[in-house]
Structures are given as structure tokens and as C-alpha cells.
Amino acid sequence: MKRGQENGSTRHIIMTLLKMKGPLTIGALAEELGITEMGVRRHVLQLEREGLARNRIVRQAMGRPMHMYSLTERAEDYFPKNYHNLTLELLRELDHTSGTEAVNVLFEGRRRRLLAQYSPMMERRNLEERVAELSAIQNSGGYMAEWDREEDGSFVLREYNCPIRQVAVQYRKACECEQNLFEELLNARVSRSDCMAEGGQCCRYSIKPKHLL
Picture 1 (tube, rainbow, N blue to C red):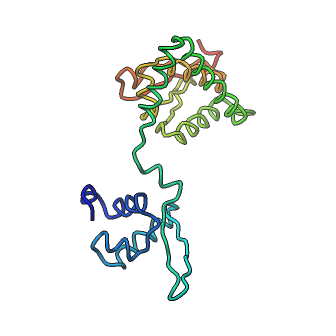
Picture 2 (cartoon, one colour):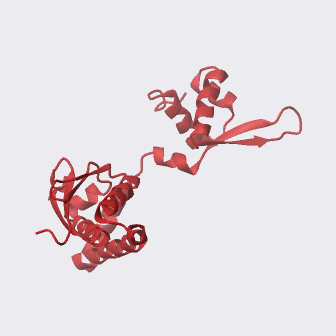
């Protein structure tokens, strides 16, 4: 086992080896890890069941076919990415060369694209159903959202994770566009009282039907 691979679970080390050296056989993984092939096979089969590893049979001129294991595209999500830093660098460069208005145009374009994508999901639904659907949409994007109905007929939507927090801290237009997107999708009045980009524990949105004052 190479330095840098000593720590972490066996599962994670197997995934790291497959990423760095794959495709690999069970025997090759066992040799790298210093454990039995039976132990490796148990982990690899579990990765297969979860859709994180795939098995390809390689036939040889002599002897048994070899089972070669590699990672799937889905497994890429388990490895660190530097998307936020790259996004910030690109936004800063655009800000520097073309000005803040050009950055705002990008955020508005994203809002319009998401509006076109999600609007059909809101058709022929009442406000409560639209809030529930919006919460599901946000959860699919990793926002850890939940919602409640208040006694006065309004709703509260809370997001406990913000995948774009690092961007939103520096470019508040991102938060403004999200709030405007919610208003358009819900066809309701939406206000934000807490925001993670401002140090809050969550992003909290109050949602009221337009007929309520």
C-alpha cells in the first residue's frame, strides 16, 4: 500500500485504488491492501450493488477469464472536486474584465433556465403542492430542504445546506435570483429572513399566497 492510502476505510481505499490504477482484479486489490481476496470481494460486490463499480470480463489465450473492476461515473461524486473555487475564479475574471453587470446577467440566465425547467412541474397544483414540489426539487440538488404550513395559511421553507454558499457569499445576486425563482415558480410572495451566506444556520423563506397581506 502506498503512502497516502494508509488511512480511511477499506471501502474508500479500494475506490481510490480503482481510480488511480484501475481496472484491477480482486487479487491485485488484495495484494495492494494486504488483506484476503474474500475480504476485498465483499467490498467490491457491495460497490457493484450500489452502482459505484463495474466488472468487465477479459478473456485470455490460456487460463480462466479475468474479472477486471473499475469505477463508474457515479463514483466520481465521492471524490473531492474544486468546482466552487473554479466557479469563483471564473466569476472574478468576468467581473474584472466585463464588470458586475456581466456577472449578474449570468445569474439571471441561470434563473430563467431553471424557471423553464421546473415550471411544468408546478402546473395545475395548489400552493401547498407547489411548495412540496419545490422542496423536493431543492432536495434533489442537495439543499436539505423541509417545509411547514403555518396557521395563517402561509408556508415556511428551510434549506439546511447550500451547495453554492461559497459563491453566494461573494455574489449576493445568487440569493436574489433564487428568491425571485421561488416567487415565480410558486406564484406567491416569498421573503427570506435567514441566509447561510450571511452566517445563518439555514436559509429560511416565508411563503404567502398573494391574497394574504
